[in-house]
Amino acid sequence: MRAGELRHLLTFQAKSAAQDELGEPINAWVAVLTCWGKVSPMTGRERLAAQAVQSSVTHSVTVRYAPQLANPKDVAAMRIVFGTRIFDIHDSINEDERNRMITLMAEEGLNNG
Image (cartoon, rainbow, N blue to C red; front, top):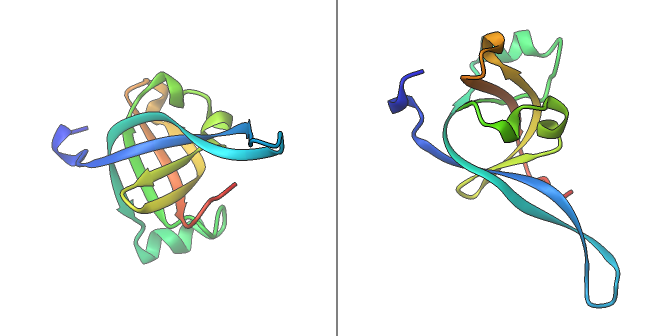
């Protein structure tokens, strides 16, 4: 992967359970990792092919490998914040299982928990 392609600053957030002043449970999002990545909208053809697997996938996000993103189940519970945009992660792929690059399939939308 060419470093120049990773031009978007992304923050990965995970849900954390907390309590308010009255002891009521509340969900909060906590930053897990901030890194540079590439956010690419899927073309019409890619979206048509992806409908068989996941019809709501709208973007492909590519980042360098990080240990925090190693477990696909943990990553699927995270979200990505890119400026004012929020992406829900549906799938993560460790390209060629070489721990160099991770491709995420994500849907743009508001994920408040």
